[in-house]
Structures are given as C-alpha cells and as structure tokens.
Image (cartoon, rainbow, N blue to C red):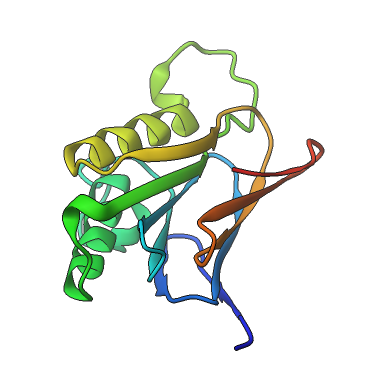
Length: 162
C-alpha cells in the first residue's frame, strides 16, 4: 500500500494510520506534538502555537493552544480506540526565533510552549519518548507511524531522526 503525507497546518490536528505519515512545517516557537499507540496502529499530531487558551481570547481554535489542543487530540485518540496506558509521544519545536533584549519570560513563547506541552503530557501520563526542542531555528517534522520515527528537518542545522 502506498503511503501519503497527511499535512497538519498551524493550529491544526490530524489523526492518521500507517502507512501514511503526519507532517507539519513552520515550527518556530510552535511545538509539534505527536501522540501514538505503542503498536503503531495510529497516530495524531497537533501544531501548538501558544501555551494557554486562558491568556488569550476564548472561543478561538482549540488546536492553537497546548492546554486545549493536546486534550482534544488525546480525546480523539481515545474515541478511535486508543488505550490510555499504551500511548507515547514525541515533540519538536519551541525555538526562540528572535533575540530578546528583555528577560521577561512572557516573551519567551517557545520555552513556554515546551513547558506547557510537557506539563499536559505529564498530566495525561503519556511518556515523551524523544524530543528536539529549543534553539533558534525552524523545523519541519514528519512522523512515520509504521516505524514510530520522527524525522526533523531544520533550517541550517541538518536533518535527524528521533
């Protein structure tokens, strides 16, 4: 069976089945979160832009925020038959794309996104198997559901599989 790329846009979420692959581009301060079952039967990806929905306008796209997008992805995976104790995750992104003159943590969106994603995955008891976060460069990620590998392409820093 031929695989296809399932594209996940900014503030978007998709679920796919092998042999298809999930891909998202343009991860700067955003974080790509992949949750998959350990039997590689399916996977979901959400492209998080901001850490918390309460700090912003209510009623926006739930996939934009870590505190609502990850729970929505999790709930959708449970609806299609995921077993809570068999879920794993991988994350990438969370860069600080611009040099800041201020030490104000509010402006460190990438770091705050990563912290929020880790906190929520911990609340859900979903282990993070691997991560590629931080730095000051953009990323494109592609998750191979069949093999459980996350390919990370960076701007100026090469490509790796985690």
